[in-house]
Amino acid sequence: MKDIFVGFADEKTKKAFEKLKKGKGAEPNLYGLLNRAFDDLKKDPSIGIKIPQKLWPKEYIKKYKIVNLWKYDLPNPGD
Image (cartoon, rainbow, N blue to C red; front, side):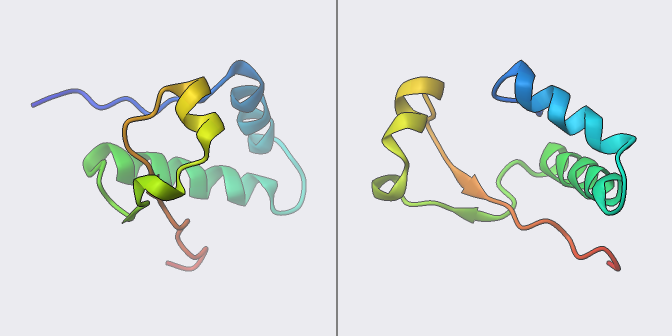
């Protein structure tokens, strides 16, 4: 079985994510929902909705060299 890694596009995004953990209001809840999403993606990387290639942002293709793109809806807090 292949190891699956969920990462961040850049260090700035990773730091913003980590900041949510000790944030105020809904931020810690969002941190938990994102971690749940990462776990879901590790179990099934094709979960969600596949975005047709013609809709991919050109800057994503150029900057991140993407070869596929999926949309994943965060779970509802009560789920």
